[in-house]
View 1 (cartoon, protein in one colour):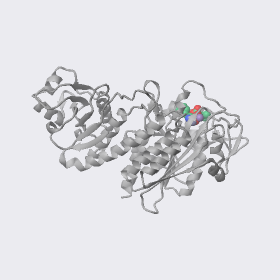
View 2 (cartoon, rainbow, N blue to C red):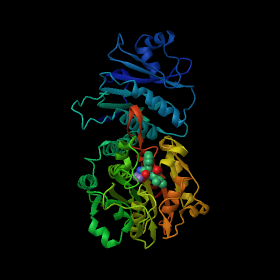
View 3 (cartoon, rainbow, N blue to C red):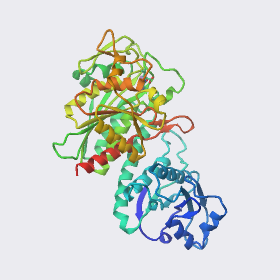
View 4 (spheres, rainbow, N blue to C red):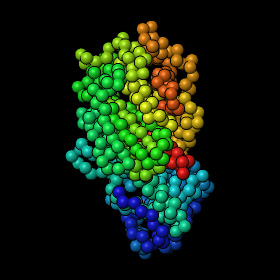
Length: 497
Ligand code: BES
Ligand code: MN
Ligand code: ZN
């Protein structure tokens, strides 16, 4: 994709389609007004037919624009003529890009950055346009013979006035970095489990390290993990023919002594459940159980491309969870790297076994904060659906920062309590704790388990089981929460300026 900011008058710009906004009651945005004037009132003519009234999300594609050089105009309804909420702005952008499906449009000039959005500047608007357009234009064709995509978009230009050029341009660079991060995350998520194995994920990380000097990637093998005493993590891969990998990424662009932000992503490349085997329906979707890990890679790509002045560590414990003669069995007792013992009451609660040893490993980085991302519990889908990711943590300031970043990025979180009353549910008669806490409050008890390994630092856990991918007809990875975490890092970088 090619991106640019254009400050010339619209009539002078070459593209397949101009995207302009229309407010409710047929009020024209400044760009719509300009195009209306240069096309002898075409837009007003079309509005008077009543095909589009200006409600948010409506669109009309005008396929011929007489008396001008303009190929096409896409009218996009914005709703009431007052500053839009961030969500409504995204809704309008989604409508715009979705209406380009099945057209031959390759290049657009998007004039929607001029519309006012509450508390947001040109930088945010330019960034958001790029993020949303790229997100919708993405299509997974890697394993299809026909590589044709529904959206043919190759060039996105954002119209801006000269005095906003600098802000819009920096938003464009941010948007491009975040969009590329999301594309990587989605691509890895959509790849099937037979191609995207722990070894493959490790190779992808090493590849990323080659692309960016600021990024150093090292892979810990099973023998290294055994030497570290990672008995919980290694117990998960015992039932699989694919060796586990602990991928470590070290991004250093902050002050030399600045403590790092540690991001940990669950990288379970296929979760069959192990001996506590899952049911058949929808099991294919467990190829997405590595989306936390893929998010860490996407976020580090974005950070490296934006050259954020931060120190960031990415840790991705990667394994399969399969049933096998050597697999974990219910009742087995493991000794984690921390020394704490764990009774495995359900081998399908494997994510926390990977994460607990990785949390202990994170101690050696003396972290500023630790944030883990995991498709951890089906219960999170019951609690929050596919709208918000779950947030739990031991530090209010960190949780508030993450929630705020989620709102800014249109990639929301909702916090659940981590009260010690819930810890009761993890009692085991035979070990320091059980790996499951019964059927009640499954997302919370999973986080309670993790909390026991995160006592030495400020920590937050994002349960992305409902948000990392879509199910049904539009099944596919979403790239969430790359936007949220990128925003969090941008906010942190601004603080450290
Ligand atoms: N990867 C799954 C969680 C999951 C399930 C995410 C469905 C998205 C959709 C995780 O490893 C798992 O199996 N969790 C169990 C935990 C239970 C055994 C306590 C679950 O949610 O059923
Ligand atoms: Mn599982
Ligand atoms: Zn899992």
